[in-house]
Image (tube, rainbow, N blue to C red; front, side, top):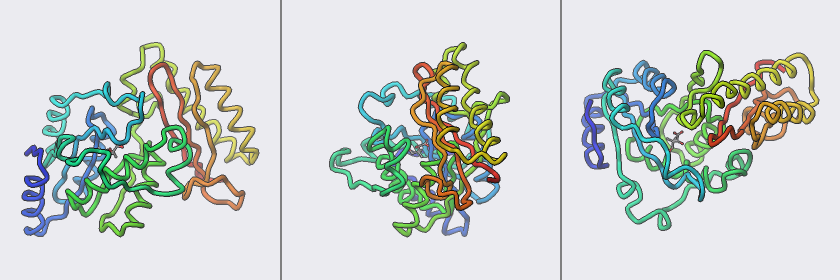
Length: 283
Ligand code: PAF
């Protein structure tokens, strides 16, 4: 696997592949790679000739007081894992390479509406940071396909809308969440959990499954279901941020017109802010 730090070297390699008629897939990450990331890379390999992975902890998507400074960095292990699964190219730009004029002078991409609710309401500016860096990375790599995990359900919708609105010629693929055997969604932030918190953590997904089953069983009192779930989480030791039943396509409040629903949750467990979701198969 080659590793490059500059946009110039990245473009040289990607251009050579493109001239040879090869299809390019891209997996953007913030590193500290786990099984969820590796599934993204493997799916990318099945769908394209070449796979580029980026590792860049994007300061622009972290708010004041969030975990940017302490975000786990495990570059040596990440490189070894990517080598093992035969990734073609790793792009590890510096903050200076991505934001040469500094973050304050950077053109910002904001995706209205969908960015303002749920995680966007709790983390102001977060999705502008995500949309801006993903837009830049897509322009740097110019892939045919880019893959994102579905654990970050709202992020995936923000990115899809951005790509559509800005006519960026790339296919966006959402890949199902990878879970531990007890249901906990794989996340770099799981590393913040103590052993006791780790054993409580699957309650988040179990609660999402219980709400989903209630809706599938015909319960349409979404507000009562949300409150009940918040209580379950609090009793289990979480500090819930939100627990919300929404239309899966646009995250608007369900209008009972039979649209596909998604249940989204964010909750603190100790230092870790865990997020997860479950699409309701039938309602
Ligand atoms: O999901 C992530 O890891 C990040 O938000 C992303 C998409 C790599 C942008 O920094």
